[in-house]
Image (cartoon, rainbow, N blue to C red):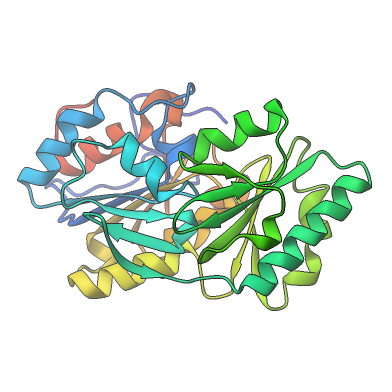
Length: 291
């Protein structure tokens, strides 16, 4: 989907009405892949000076991702003091190395998901499971192609012989399908939807978590604890695992490259991740020089 480079867009494709004065923002929450990160999966260089300006203004910056906490902490190493990380699709929230909250997944359920993944693979689906624990992530599929994909999101990753024998506190199970996950693997997980969340978090990824776990639930808890309102919150997202957190902010932005359901759900639309949409939108709302 195209976007007008010089302006922010709403879902009607027109320039939204923005106040003449800077918006009273206290919290900026952004997804990573397809949202903050550029087309090569890198953090835009313009973010680093912007983080300093946000800190000076008393605005908290929070990455919210399906990625592992260790991966997010590595990406923001050196600038992460006071930053809140909403990791593993909202199942694990950490600030300055201390856990603020988590929503662990029952080990028996994780085992059932692993068994389902094994059956899919036996039937010819090119899929593998990542068992996401607090201490590490774990895989039993060890081919180079799968490990390359898993290591993009999981800095701490261990290979094991049997995922059902791992001893850790689990947060979710993430399945990577080399094909379109919405057509193959996600439908095969329908048995879990009555009691758990089955969330498509990317073209090739689907996550199974507790019914109470999502980025939006984590964000609302954070807002309550910090005394920050939805009107003081800006959220950016691009995929289906971002829907609930868009609902928690009055300043909710879908990226121009977002999934159609995300564009319909958000109040506004920002330029795509390849056009520095997050940085430019923040600058516009706070009346800063464009990044």
